[in-house]
Length: 114
Length: 113
Image 1 (cartoon, one colour):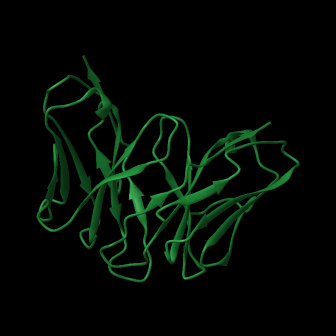
Image 2: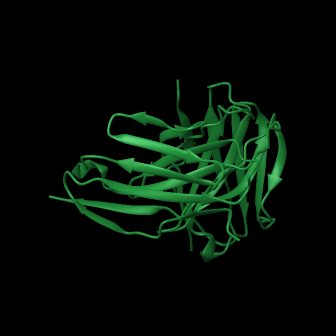
């Protein structure tokens, strides 16, 4: 199983809503990532979890709140987002450290904030 | 200085052409290097990992030059299906316990009949 599963695939939310993005992998990877990708731009790193601990936060606004309940799951809680937060949110996982750090990506959640 | 820089593109080539992309990285301690391919409105997918002096996979050849801190991707005999954005990705982790994959801006390739 080399799959990273993200739900939902599409999400439309208002600026006062609270929603969560979910990501799951069963490859035994211990590093999990959230990336944000705007149209015609490369993915930008938001957060890295390593062994279920937050290891990197790329100065992401607090309206984005990550959570890693266990080694297979990664959530991104959204609250009071702005229209400019509309983007494709990609989850990825990889083995932690060493040379075998190829990341496998989920299909993404396409988020629209209205 | 940007951490990972790529040829700006776009590259428009005819079928059968050979095309090469270059990428430079800033962290000399980086250990892992990858080329990903991303189709429009899809997630990035691993095309090739690049280790030590490089590797080849069919029509694709990736080279790593540590002294100059650059990576290249060569595509021979281009197919229409090669049309995509090619992302250079560098693991900025210097051997610790976590990955920190940094993406270049990507180079768009369009192969025409």
